[in-house]
Image (cartoon, rainbow over all chains, first blue to last red; front, side):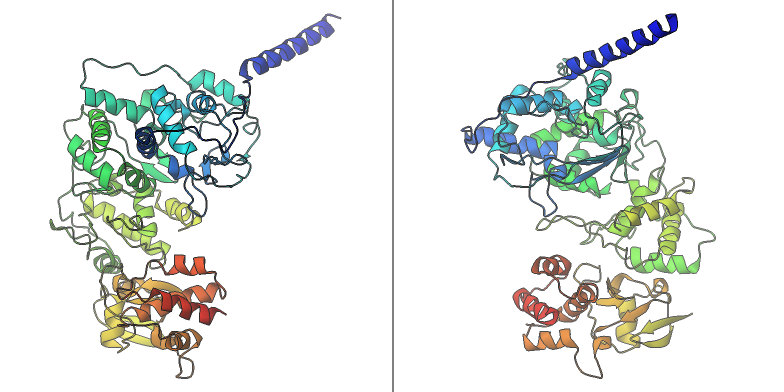
Length: 424
Length: 150
């Protein structure tokens, strides 16, 4: 009898807990608004919203296969499966056309959609929650006045139990901090503005901070480097591997043009970030640069000493690989001070060559660097059809040995096959 | 040092520095003047050839990297000494002004038609985007590719 009572009590307890969890995670739907009624908006608010959308990099995920801005559908790979970015154009049926500003604000600050469903933190509301009400208002005014695009988003492909949305409420208890950032009086106004943008809408930590097994950023390792679409995102803290320590001036130029002569070109997902930041106000980019530069102030110089400009002698390199390097790479990547029309820098300066893994060096060779259509910028051809995997592997190893004093990479083979699977 | 190269169905022994770009060997050693020198940086596409059927900038591929793969130049597309369907379409549409980019345009378009014989306009535009033409012959080039793709 006692045994049975214990069982019953346990079942009741579990049921109550589930019920409590449900009641606690439940969020009401917010009434739809009639479309196509658009809240009227003044030009200044609209423009501010556009600038904030550029800083928030919204368009990089919320874009359709055919490149329609904000129409969504891009698959975001996560360790738990694939999440498809939502349509944030004001289409009533497939977008946010019937979302009130209240519903939009709740999504940005609490990660809940208009109908009351939990949103996955692939949408970085852990950062967006820091955005002020005024900024969310401008962003809403901007998005709700975009041309509506009818684009139904496919369902997410997540493994059990991650496909059960209410569990996100538990994630939020552990990892979502809705408290706003307080002004740090000991720092400049620009630094505070930069921190607000970097920690908030800019969500730099989403890629540049490593994540724990539940997919949340590790707070004690902020800006220690992470990954994005298979690319290694370099550390922004004192672990930076850059050959020259990043200054606020250098970061300002790099973030708004995608290139700096002592650091080279933004590639992979960062190329898109810099393209968006080019549309943001210079003083905001400058503020972000000041904050980011302050993250690595502890280190007086780079954590890794640079190799000589024209590289170390490489004993034992096969003549074939030296020939391929000279014929395919050295024409642009010369070790002089001129960068030429492709804006290629000496590889002794390249962070990709100095990083702990070969992911970026491999990807940039296979995929190249292409400026956005119609804008000037650094260019590197994609070598995926020109070089065999074996040649790419030997080349990467040769460059590592010649241009750094770092140990050889051991992950080259895996990185090449991962990059090839990803479409290179 | 001798490097073996398969070009347009023939095997050649090339006795030159293995870091030499493929383009220079094709033009200067083998007398194949279809591929042109444009930028020398892999940006414009005038030097385009096929390596195992895939469109490739020959100005930035050193011959050491070619290996046993098969090279095809504009000359290699001829069928019994006559222009092939795509080349004839370029002639029929008079799809050239100065003509300097056209060898590269034909080679890139042929690479598309090899894997997709009936591309849509969007697919053609996307595929041809890296190749530059400064005369503005794009509309005629589109017509020529579509004529060959029917």
